[in-house]
Length: 463
Image (cartoon, rainbow, N blue to C red):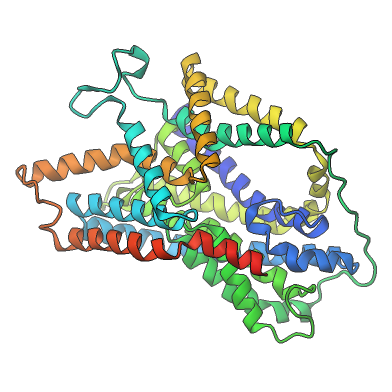
C-alpha cells in the first residue's frame, strides 16, 4: 500500500462504521434482537412499535435520529479538532504529552468494563506485549533469540487477533454448547399509517438534539463508548417525554433518543484520535491501524499545522477524511433509509455460516498485509489471549489501545528524559504533567468505586 491508498481505505472504514450504526437498529426494531450492543435500548420502544403495526414508522424514526446525530457529531469534530490540536501543540511538551497518555490509559481502564483493576491489568499487559522486540536503543527485549520476534509482534496481527479472533473463538464455544436449533425470528406486520409526518419530526427534534449533544460529549471522552451514550440519551429522553405513550411501550421518542445518542459518538470519537493520536473505541482503533499500516497520516497535533507558503499534506488528508465523513452521512440520508428494511434478512444468517466467513476474511487480510505466515500464527495466538481475557471478564479494549500507544509512549518518555538533561523527576516538575498524573490517580480511584460499564449494565437490566 502507498499513502495514496489511505483515503479510499479510510472511506471504506468510515462507511462501515456509519453503516453499522444505522443498520444496528433494523433487527432491534423488527426482531427484538439488537444488531449491535448500542441498539439494546432501541428494542425497548422499537419492537413494541413494530408489534403495533408501526415497524415502518419506527425504522423511519431510527433513520432520521441516527443520521441527524451522526451529522451533528461530525460538524463538532470538524469545528473542534483543529483548535484542540493547536492547543496541544502550543502548551504541551514531551513531559505533558507522556502524562496525557497515562491519563488517557487510566481513564479507559477505569470506564471500560465492570472492574477498574481488570482494566488496568489489561492495559499493563498490552504495554508489556508491545515491549517485546527491538527497543528504541536497538537492544533486543524478550525476543529469546527468535528472529521472528526481533521486530516485535506485527501490529495488525496482534490487534485483529485479540479483537476478532478472540470473538470468533468465543462464538465457536457458544455454538458448541448450544443444542438448540437456529432461532426463528418473529415476523411483524404493518398496518395503519407508517409515514413520518412533519408534526412527528417537530415532536422528535428536541429529543434528537439533546441526545445528539450527549452522544457527542461522551464520544469525545476516550474509552466510554456509545453504550453509555445510548443509556444517558434514553434517560434524558425519558425525562423530557410529555407524549401519551410512556417509554418502553412504543414511544417514538424512545427510539429517537437511543439512536441519536449512540450515532453521535462516531464523529466525536475521532477528536482525540486526530488531535492527540489516542483512540477511544474499537472503531477508532481500526481507523488508527489504517493510518499506521499504510502511512501518509500520523495522527496528532502536527496534522493541523499550517505554515504560510507551504502545504501540509497531512492536513489535506485530514480534511479529505472530513469530506468522506460528510459524504457518508449524505449516503445514509439518501440510500441508507431505503436499504434499512432489506437489511433485516441478514439477521437470519446462522452463526455457524457467518463465523467461518469472518475467520477466513480475517486471516486472509492479516496474511496479505504482513506477507508472512508467522503473522497468521501470531493472530491465532493473540486470539487465544483475547478468548481467555473474555472468559475472565477482562475487557480487551484497554489491552489494544495500550498496545497501539506503547511505542509513542516510550518514544515520548525518552525524548522528555533527554530534553530534561536526564532528570528522573521530569514528569512531576511540570505543573501540567503533574496535574495529568494526579487526575489519572483520581480517575482510577473514584471511577473504580462505581465503574461506568457496570452502571450501564445495571441501568439496562432495570429498564
